[in-house]
Image 1 (cartoon, rainbow, N blue to C red):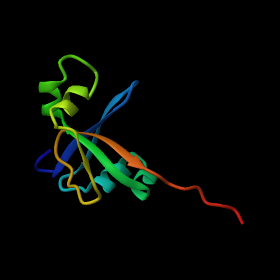
Image 2: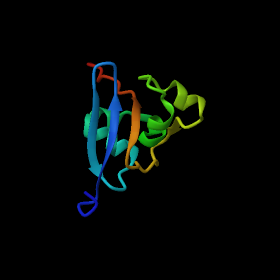
Image 3: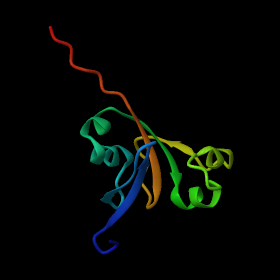
Length: 100
């Protein structure tokens, strides 16, 4: 993976946890675009925690509460360079086109 300049980030929801592969050095909006192009186009921010921090702090719960309490959950903007093992929630907003 390192020789190919690839890394992974994770998304998690109530039904699924998923790993996504991106190029090393990818910015948050481009990483969001791997999931769906609308996520990149309407990118607002990324809420990020590192997997290693989550593993240390979650205490067996399927929740970010302990990570947030420890101050390891943060908001990042368009210039954020994704890191290996990031757990991310992308905030986006894409307005539908209005017919005239």
